[in-house]
Image (tube, rainbow, N blue to C red; front, side, top):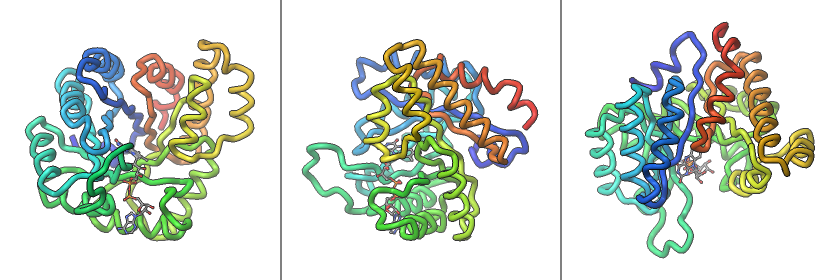
Length: 290
Ligand code: FAD
């Protein structure tokens, strides 16, 4: 099933993201976690992709398993950094034969210690979007950044880049994590004003461990509100308390988004079935009325 068909339905959607293992020996554990999340029957799931193609096989195998064992439609991420057209075409052919219909087209970041040419055939994700569209009947999404991508000179340049990606054929966008919904609402205003009309799905990251705050900020550069910093300071030293508080904070963010007219929510569930289940349970009645 195409993700745009799910996003086009009247009902709200809740989806979860998982990531494949870097080492093949870890596959069984990660697969068990991903299938634990698939068993919750979210509207769809996405599986990330190691920049440079490092997880290609595991991404495809995980996405295929989720679809075949639980019937949950899946998005495979695909990055084009350090890749050429032939390599991407080969990856697309593998995805197609695995029954994958949905791809999140990403530029990716340069892997540490990589020494070859980086952005040869694909300087931006928009070139990847174009190639995927030429290669078959895939539904193609992309990433966007409510707090501006670090490579963009300013907010306007960021939106201009996004517009090119959508014009290249990107059919929906999923956001980078954010912890302050006002940043998302403000971004939506700028995006719609620029004439970008594809569905935009907020990506919510439940922070359930103290160490994740530092990592999340380093990875995404996102702003952490004082309210959340206080929660982490107070509960970060207790594993169970921080997990509960993190799920509650993410739930609160999601309820506020849903109350303000957002219909589709994507959760970075970090391969943790209990986190995905906690959020789903907290929203069980709310999702019935949207
Ligand atoms: P682009 O869309 O190419 O944007 C990068 C920069 O170029 C931006 O500043 C943009 O404004 C500008 N730009 C874009 N198009 C043009 C254009 N045509 N002309 C001029 N400027 C342009 N990384 C992984 O390695 N694996 C994953 O699975 C993964 N999944 C992700 C999922 C989501 C939802 C998000 C938000 C990010 C994900 N990332 C992943 C991280 C992502 O690869 C990095 O943030 C990367 O630095 C940018 O990728 P992009 O696809 O957004 O790039």
